[in-house]
Image (tube, rainbow, N blue to C red):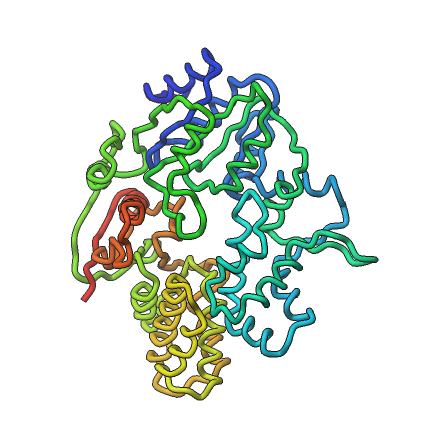
Length: 468
């Protein structure tokens, strides 16, 4: 029989004895998922658990009571969208195909394919609003040279076009699944109880989707950790917990015991999050500051920034170690940028300056500059002249899509590590936190949150590696 903490007992009592909307403020490693599964047993009426991703949804489907529906917001919104037209075709290359096969000039297509990662991210960002952005708003938001505004507006008109033409099926992508049901003001199923996880990572669209599932007496129970809010840079609302608790008038209930981490690791986290407590039976563990490290297989190496992380990882690749780079979505923009450079015949400084001139957004300039620094790091590791194919093959080798089945060392940015836990964690170059670009109170708080996330990935051993 499970022995529940006082925090958990208080939560279960509130679920059983009241109809209050609740927000469970759960520190890292606090048994949040187990708590949500247990409290679901006390709910009456139609109930849904909203999972952050499909992996969690699949896990919770098995663990939750049979009468509780389990779904991601994408899956739920897609089912709503299909009620209007079952002929949708899902293709996450939608934006690329619109331009590749559309009536655009060679100059416009060249601009896109040279900057496809950034252009697609721009159109993704436009689909993070509960109301459809106008063409004028697209022009204002344009992060590139203003000469490209009309091109971007034309592409946007095609992206949001949901009308079938003859036998042509309407193409939608992952972002359309969320926003189109809202923009078309479609009817959502209503539930008596909604449990929503990872509240701190919600954005404006996701908040509106949850609201559309409520009737007048719906009970909403959210769980999350405001101190693990680290995705503001990609559209999550830094103040999501505050917005959630105010919007649904929630009673906040703490879940403060960390069962994951050794007591010495919890002590480090406590300096950032004073409410966190170590479990009664937690071992002392190890926390040390070291200059260099020999990372054993099975360990996790974290870093705030990608370039120094890749440099450190390449040391081990060249030494014959098997590694896995978690942030595999970086491989495409790196291959594209490196291939363009090697095929240009230009010197590095001239190439990157010309590339950066295409952006008006400081943020996008930083992204491309960091990609360029990583490309230089990879190229400098080879004594011979690299061909574009050799460079792309090398990136695929050091950033494989699948985790190796043999023992390996895992490398990840802190942003990419959320949700993970490892017995031994190395935080490489802790001096990079906070970022030199963090200036506002919100940005500095996000940096503190990153450090907290990094610390609480470790179960028994945490090493701060200064680097040479």
